[in-house]
Image (cartoon, rainbow, N blue to C red; front, side, top):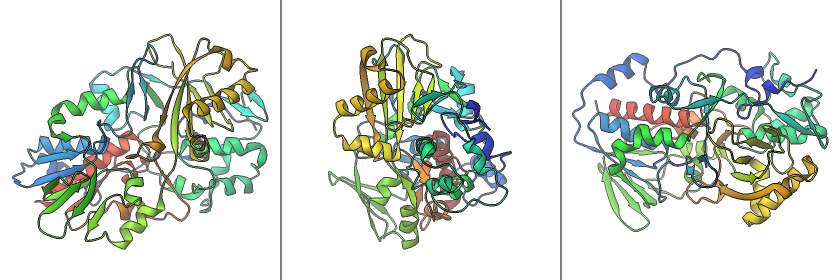
Length: 455
């Protein structure tokens, strides 16, 4: 049976064949009922303490926005020279703005979806056609439906997606398609768990359709949140130490500036927590650091290629150098021909090993030339490489579910002594990790937990 293109969307390739109805609360608290959430948000707060937020990504920004609405004193420390985390905007490369990081709104049933509706943001359903690079040919369909291997009634085994796919008969001919599917989840096929990839997303409830912004995802967050809290954000503050041994929490940055707070919300990428870039006193509980180590986050980059002609299809899945190429002009108000190379996992690691952007672009153009009979190089105009792996404060793409992961996210997201709280997409417990709206949900959840702790 052939694979339909509708089953292989740019994000969540296997969405329709993997999950039926989704359940659960849209924004679950770690331990709060819906009634408790509503009560905490409605109650007046009389709190003279201070909350320090580490990281000005979507989770940290939204948490600050909510704290300000409750008149709670807070400050956000951001390591880089800009806010937004894995959101970013590129102007001037094309005659329309580009998302340097997250760009697809994955369903409208979310905080971000509600904002887009309220602000009348111009979004377009991305139902673009997809084609496959398979056995050295561009094909409209695959000879076998790889999505069907996940529809078995019994649980999938907790083995790598690569091992599972091979066991189900999707061997060497499908290896680049398998890598593309795994890469969409931010990992090499040999590292992501077939079981936990599905298990963790059983409660996904934001919707199955993907949308693109005419402007950018960064604009939505910037316009909705940042204007009210910009004065609370301190940039270029690389946190090196957190001392929570006493009643007052002391935070030290790389310039030896010290900040004091009563509570801290940490929203940095999981890579930063895993690398021990922040030293804690006392050291974090072993179960916490073990949980961090079980949450995966690997290399990732986006390369925008500008061409004089559109010789390519809207989406090409299954390249050996890049698992997924996508036409950036969809949903945009402009005429430039921009093709996005969306590169994750082992493919991103390989391109990182080439060391220079020129070599990265050369490799991608070579693959496109092989796909399109040499049409890429002659029409090539320029490129922009956004390498999230080499960003010292990000160090990768987004979190994924590893073999043997278990309940690591639930353990990692637990607060410590009602002093230290954890947010960010990797700490999302509702299957919405890897997404902006998932990060926003954790900011919401942890503000509720902070409010609960000060009642």
